[in-house]
Length: 154
Image 1 (cartoon, rainbow, N blue to C red):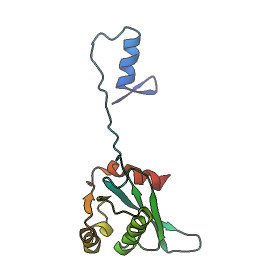
Image 2 (image 1 turned 180 degrees about the horizontal axis):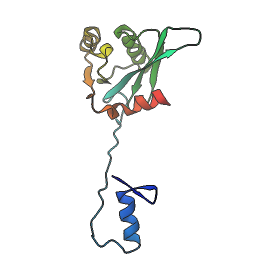
Image 3 (image 1 turned 45 degrees about the vertical axis):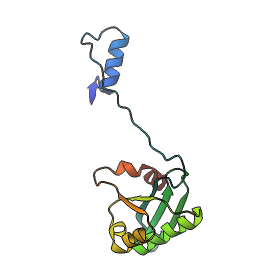
Image 4 (image 1 turned 30 degrees about the vertical axis):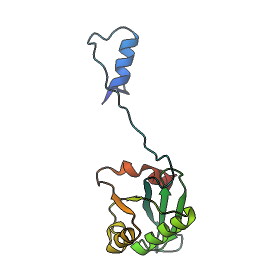
């Protein structure tokens, strides 16, 4: 929670620390501290390959849409990306296959959002045929794909 004091926005924790430092905290309450647990796999392909689509982009002097499809290993951060004029399941599978060829190993799981390309029958059949687990992220929690999102915006 943030409070505005003298035109400056301060968090409850900052106010508590300042009062404590000067011996003015008479309530003796403790501010909540959040502990975030970062996760990363110990070995490449241990758990997750993250996939995402960035776009559409419009090139100068063109009205056609373009997309950037990426696939990233959770541990090694190796990435396979492809520029595409469409974002079909076939295009997504091409990037995943390129990633598998680049790493010379298939992942245990593929983590993705709930886009049509990732929920299609073609994509699901490919994963089942190759014994790769399908892991969708919840709609309300896109932070699970933070690494691929950071790659896309970086």
